[in-house]
Length: 367
Image 1 (tube, one colour):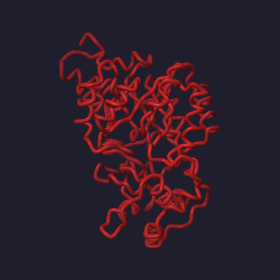
Image 2 (cartoon, rainbow, N blue to C red):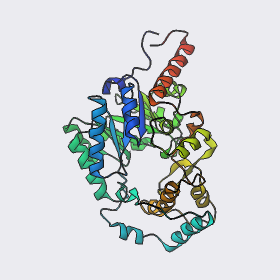
Image 3 (cartoon, one colour):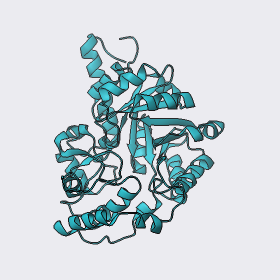
Image 4 (cartoon, rainbow, N blue to C red):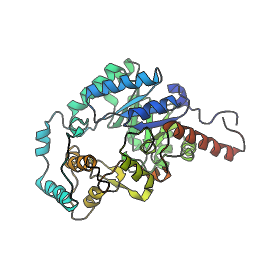
């Protein structure tokens, strides 16, 4: 095989070695993946502008001039600038009573600490705007809109030499973002962890690749192995977006309880639910998601009200390290996570597996 099948136009766009994107909330994972030849995106939706600025500086001190990304959520449905008190007052009494009944049924304690949720970019547009401003000021190499259209920020970002990635779950969303001028489209399938759309990865990726022209398309949703990477490239993608894969890595700052739950989990242990944030979201099953799925549960609220409602449960479960209550966003590829490995080894394993797939298909050495 004359050409390295893993060297794609996405690699050329960013000047990276491997078309593997790691999405993570841990700075150490970002540094490890970037220095291993991949690309990494740090989720900062729950951080203050000062924390975001500090994180960008920290990453640059570890990776030098290598590119990395920062991810925020920009839901169009977020209130403009409502106070936390006003938002809390908007939660119906019926929903408060149901949430309380879950706490009583499972003996959920009170949270110990202050909830980071109060700085969440999806809480209101004012918070999100301040987060965006610091990313522009710091000229992060790449900005990723994990939820909501980044169209309004594209011009300002491009003027600063930044690139914009848009995550989409439907082809019509991809069309809008391509017309707006995003540099990369991440086509995210139903298999994915966290907020995701209703279309399967094997359907959404080739649909978007067919209309993307020269814009690289990245496949997301259930991607955890080199076989997935090879399959994504065959579907027309220029790389893969991986998230669940890094949650149990050695560098990940996830609680060991969560790491062990992820290693033990199969795809049957994930659930697609609006009960956490009000948006469809794939997570590990837990009492909170199970109770909201019952017929007697009230209809879930929209964003940010459902997130505010679930926050006490989430914070308490984590503060008290209650394994029976804790959960994490996890995609359907979680079954392939069977051990805690260093991030560099995860990158290497994925590359070697993908090259082996291509070699077996063609009978020639790849790369």
